[in-house]
Amino acid sequence: MAWLATERHRERRADPARILSNLQSVVCVALCHEPGRDATRDDRLGRIARYAAGEDYHGVMKDLLSALAASAEALIPGTRVLWYSDTGAILERGWAERAGLGWIGKHSGLLSQRLGLWFLLGELLLDQPLDPDPPLAREHCGTCERCIEACPTRAIVAPYQLDARLCISYLTIEHRGMIPRELRSLVGDWIFGCDICQEVCPWNRFAPPARQARLHARALEGWTLERFLTLDDEGFRTLFEGSPIRRARRAGFLRNICVALGNRGDADAVPALARALESDPEWLVRAHAAWALGEIGRRVGDADCAWAEVQEALDRGSRDVDPEVRSEAEMARSVLRRI
Image 1: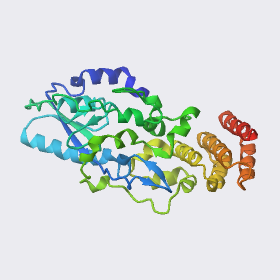
Image 2: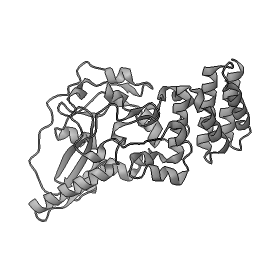
Image 3: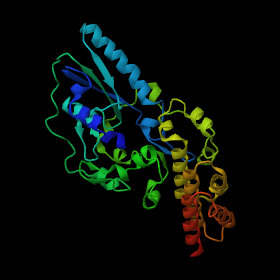
Image 4: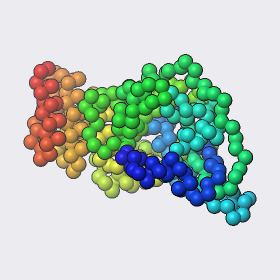
């Protein structure tokens, strides 16, 4: 996420008056999304972060914050208002903590005694003074370190410190290249985002249901991980129209699908992965399909009828035009030779 480190963004985060001249107040809001577990876990589909199971929250927040901004302009004639929701150089968690919405937890996200963790943040910037709400007197994590202990990739390197390069959410959404080999097995069947550090937090027992129906999980009837591998660019954009999943782009999403299938180790996925390795237009997808085939072959062993199909697919992959694909196929073959 190099764009966060640009000089312009650093300056605007350090001095929000560069965003809105004569900035006087920041109004922070929270919008709950669906906390229900079954909405985001489907054995056919893999796991999707709860906030991404419904409509893209950017659009939902845009509508709600635009209405709130209009109300502020009506109440205080002549005021200038800007709104943000994960869309600009705003330190959302820091502002929300100062506004009393919650505290920064050991997993580096915002927690609330009233809302748990299943909520999204938005802000209004105004050039008028408002009476501030006080921040919480203290944080309420105490000695609990469940989030740190639960993270598969050890991305929470210390309390309140997150290494994004190890975070499953970063790897499956923002990262555009290869998922590092040493992390792939730890990603499990997460195909977009991750909720693990939030799922284990005891404060979530207070999380209310989402009142915004647009954030409820959408149905993906008839879809499976294997079928996702058949999506072309147009099909991907159409299927996930209005969904946050489009942020991963087709190549990143199908890369994640391959990793999930490899981690499941189900021989039934071999034909779909073999087709992806042979004919997907994106080298990134082909490379991860080769890895996934190797993982399945390693798990099922040479006694399974899928073994020969895995070997044939990897043989073809070792002659791919892309060096990354060839490398992944060769590494997979070398592992299988030792079985």
